[in-house]
Length: 258
Image (tube, rainbow, N blue to C red):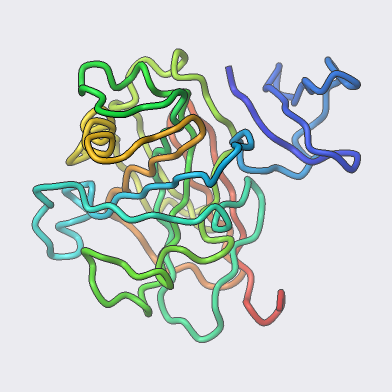
């Protein structure tokens, strides 16, 4: 099933996809259907009673590492992101004025479903709630170290669109065989497959939970294939993953939203 969180009629609602529409689950409106254009899309992540952990991977596709003239890492290269960076489908991502290279990164996002610590790789999928699409924008101008991107590169408000759907894990038979693609203004600029990850989903869950706890609602962004390009103001970026949906973002200038 495809789950969504949306804003409509002055409130936030849980919804599911039903015959090309959004069917509300809110008790007062249960069963009511809305078109995709009637609502504001929010990140499809339920609120959590604590700070949400968002972990992201660098250079986790061998072709992307080669694109940047690096050898694939021997251990996951991870960094954390704040929840304020997350926005929903059809929202606006702010491009800082004066930057020369700000690019998308289409990524499979893994949403944790139950508390996880010291998880074995063979059991890792038992801890997954579902999957969604993420766009982990990066600002190359601020990058000083490919292996440890600083906060200004990756952890800016509005720079991690996610959605539109959270798809139940049971409806994704093999998350390691999904096609990814990105279009900028209708032109195909990136394509790949999750089969090319250096560290697959079970390996990442085993690795992270070997030294930290993951809790329901935490998110792992699993890296991007090669083919990233600069996205000027006005660009419409669509990141799509097979079976999970297409995540649309429009680039806006910092000065126009200040």
